[in-house]
Amino acid sequence: MPDDLTANYRNDTLVLGISDLARLRRERPLVLARGRGVFVFDDQGRDYIEAVSSFYCVGLGYSDPELIEAAISQLRRLPMYPSGAHRTVPVVMELAEKLAALAPFPGARVTFATTGSEANDHVLKFLWFANEAAGAPGRRRIITRAGSYHGSTVATTAMGGGARLRQVFGIPAGDMLHVSQPVKLPGESDAAATARLAAEFQQTIEAAGPETVAAFFAEPLSVSAGMRPPPEGYFAAIGAICARHGIRLVADEVVTGFGRLGTFWGSEAVGARPALLTAAKNLSSAYQPISAIVMGEDFADALEAASNAEGWLPHNGTYHAHPVAAAVALKVLEIFERRDLVGYVRRIMPYWARAVAELDAHPLVRGTRTHGLLAGIDLDDPAAGAPATSLKVEGIAQQVYDAALDCGLIVRPLVGSLVLSPPLVITEAEIDELIIRLTRALDLAVASRRDA
Ligand SMILES: Cc1ncc(COP(=O)(O)O)c(C=O)c1O
Image (cartoon, rainbow, N blue to C red; front, side, top):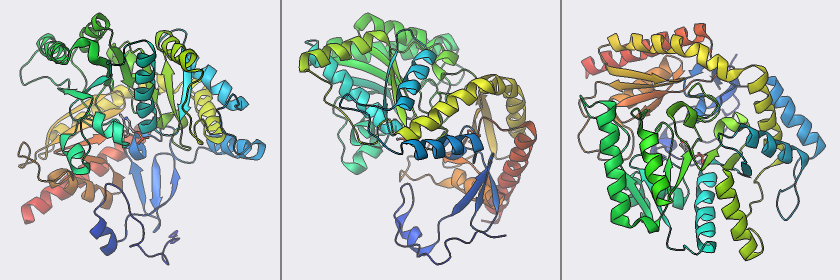
């Protein structure tokens, strides 16, 4: 039964990001009308396995009744009250306490924002505020990895490692420095890769002047850069260099937090020991927009010292720590504990790894890798390695994405590869169905290549 809710709407009014605006005038976008578990349904009633949990965020799957109920009861109790100006609401206090208890460092303190971009952006403000008050205003530079994604604001676009992305928006790199992704070269051992990357990191700091570098921002595992796990020992080596130079290691846990790698925080899975971290997305299973900055004691003290110097923390946002979002996030944390979701991910990881590895046999697949409930699939793309003419994902990955839609599957295309990040609650039978649909999509892409 089609949910034809939008038949009467024009499709040339709405402007969508990471979309071709001329195509939006010509063609209706895919309109998703419902969701249940790992499935979403379009307005014609067709089902799709959401193999990316939307943008890596709906960890508990769609339409979880407990999360819906948590939002409704908070809406009934107190639908909105901003946290700030020495005022807050009970669910926000409770959420801060629960998250602090889960932090991978002792004495944590927590503040909230609305999106992952905002959380990363605000960490920059807090770092600069704290360093200024500590008499080190020159400690402003931020190191990130080229190709990483840390958000869509001006500052996080500068921070993100895409030179072309900065260029098209005219955003200068400014205080941001970029080092290589933690990727092993062909034939390189983990130890050699770690030594090479640590040497590059050290040289970057020395060239900039260690006293000018505030922080190193890194995802525990680079997801938008192609699902790249770091070589063994990478974070221990980088962490030691950071400690030597008084540089704070910030873990962007926006994707990897909440069980994605089989540990509560991705940092735990890769041996990273951050001074502070940012979280979003699965914090509320993305049912409501909320993000968090979880600070270790040392950084929280530095922020408080800056507040003492200024008289307060001059920073706030209307929707930060929104009570409905906080109520949903609290329920997410309760569910994680009650249903042992991290344990569930750990138990299903071998099945996932085996199922994804079956794709290695496909003629269009150059190689696969999994880590936790993530997968990266490199495709046999004749254009791979050639300089991209546009930021837009094109070529074989886009063809497989389009074919996958026809097969009832939503994947994330990158240049020459795909990333999968299904809801954490996916079952073995659903993994089997995902692989069947993806194999069909790969077959379709091969057939259309042959016909071309
Ligand atoms: C690693 C990482 N950090 C930050 C962000 C930005 O989060 P948001 O889209 O909620 O602003 C994203 C979004 O995909 C991300 O993948």
